[in-house]
Length: 233
Image 1 (cartoon, rainbow, N blue to C red):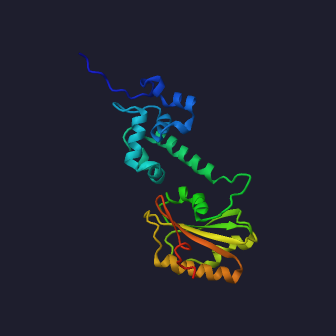
Image 2 (cartoon, rainbow, N blue to C red):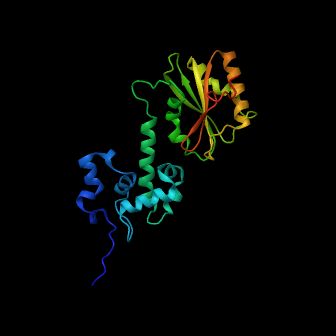
Image 3 (cartoon, rainbow, N blue to C red):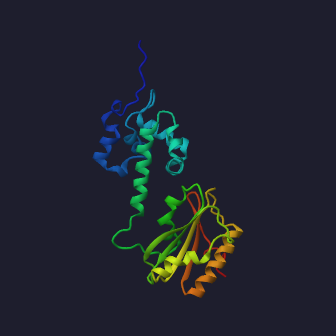
């Protein structure tokens, strides 16, 4: 009896199991992450269809967040990938990132640390270096802008506090939220983070621009220094 060859194409699946057909019938939200990746990949490798290949990528890369974090070259080196498939996956992730970053007609309102973290966590948790951003808000806590201020290792001695307030002064803003990431994935504030926060809060009082919070973004979580009473007196 001839041994059956393992399927490796989407078309080898039963029609009711094919992700494109399931998407058309049930909508994209009904598909798993592996199925969505399978649609992008289209063709798998010998013994592994595109959905199975998508599942392997998720496991090997540490989920969607890991796939977002790794470099283009690292994706290319995965079994069965290559520049074309890696480009499709990275392009899809970046489109999702840009869609989230686009401001709707109604500007977001920041009511709590969660609101601010949601604006930046997806992007900043994937950064390989430390980045510092300033969220600029009006008198009703509506988002005015998100400003990229620093890239690289942050410490209180090298950060010019005045630079953090420049966008708020230019836009006549009422308050700011400072956000930076820890590439290690651990958002526990360092002593330097607390020292920097104290300097920023003090400068805000002198400039009459309230510092609402300082968030540290990690892998899948964040820390609010204000909630922890660190640097805010």
